[in-house]
Amino acid sequence: MRRLLPGLLPELRAFARFLARDAAQADDLVQEAILRALRAEAQWDPATSLRAWLFHILRNAFLEQLRRRGTERRALERLPPPAAPAASEQEARGEVADLQRAMAALPAPQREALILVGAHGLSHEEAAAVVGAPVGTVKARVARARAALAQGWTGSGAPA
Image: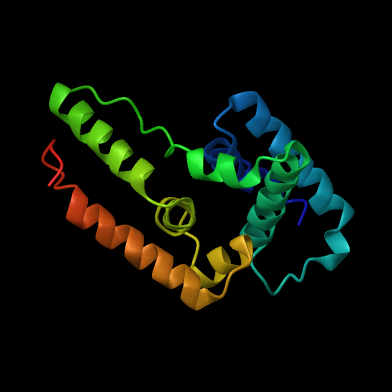
């Protein structure tokens, strides 16, 4: 496990930034997740996905922070979509802004499932393990998110 951790750090940090929306807090979350993983190393089954296990630990650390502050539900609903890379052309910037608005309009559970499966490449099973939901629920959330995006955003720089 220890030799695989460095290769997963960029993905963990990206997911932490999606959750926390703050670089410093994201770094703290990644450090906390790595510490927890190292302490619980004996609990990890090498036959399972290390990436999904670490994402689950990271998400739990984030949710614990929110619970401590008593704002879990409100904060999850207010989470904006992850920042897209800066585009060099005006039209591309407009499309990115449209996509960000469409992502922000998704319910938080759908947005989270879509980010885990679509952006981070987790399988539905791995994403289900991360969020603690049945696989069918995650599949439905991803499908609903994709359908909502397809219906509400044309990709031509303007919403449908």
